[in-house]
Length: 159
Image (cartoon, rainbow, N blue to C red; front, side, top):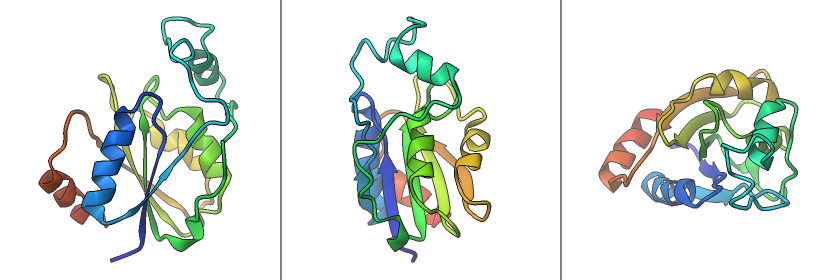
């Protein structure tokens, strides 16, 4: 089996919980993608067009700064990359993360949490942020409590 990392961004803790369960099921290491400036509740108010998340998502060139760049990406073959779905795509901090490392020859499988939407055009929005030989695939939206058995079964199909 390849060396696997679960990397995730979680604004409210929902994706973090899923990522921890997934890392355990996959026997993978885990890395939290953190913004240099943490998001507040007001920043995440999608009903406010002037909130930080709304402004970032309306500007596809937005690249929120990362708190650190300490992920040891070179040590992994596969990265399970998780985030909440915002406006049918990944938050732009995911592009910041992808552009901060060399993912050449790596396999990235996406997982997400969502209040109701699917991946939409997420893969297309992330592909320009990695090397051409990086494989990014749409994985699964993992809402609600996942069983260890169901996560392990899913991981076995992708690794």
